[in-house]
Length: 244
Image (tube, rainbow, N blue to C red; front, side, top):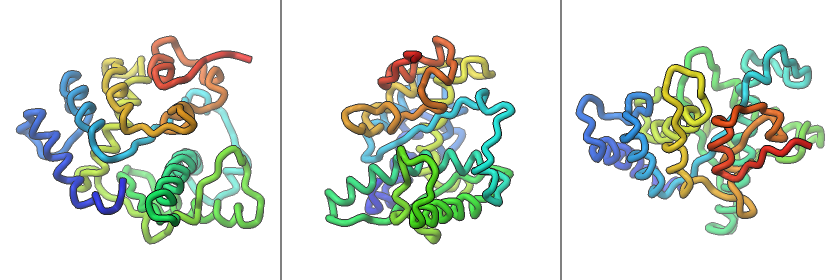
């Protein structure tokens, strides 16, 4: 979202909570909502002047996997950092195009992480600088997409408790709705409807959300070996599971 809208985010989240008739808490928390409330909240989020992205990694493909290049980076969370890179590739591509259109120049992107136990966000920020050095030396690995690292700044990357930032609550809704649309074997009921409501805030690239605002890994999509139910939300957003 534009920086000028930041003062309004708390009001957006509070209005959603009020409209849902929630009395027990003031923050928006996806897990505590009924199926009907999830769809209602998603429809309200879909009207906001924001853009959302969902990076979906099929972790069963990671069992026993080793990436020697990534493991050379001194970090205990190289896979998490790698997923953040995939996310930032798309966010910075969108923001680069949008800020050039709106302002005639690239603007820095402010990144806020939702704090989770065991993660060191300083390592995540440092990883982005590592990518910048790779780019400058022409040694970055995987060039299909690259983050626009000139739009990222160490001083504009912070982490906060989920309940303290309304923007993180909106981000949690996006992430959790896609998780519920994919996790058919978990303790929660599988439901694709909340994720479907978010289409208006999921930006397109060349007319499609596939592999941009909704991205499935590994690629190509058939390698994820998803069940028919798991494929539903990806097919809704333009994926085709054709093996070649």
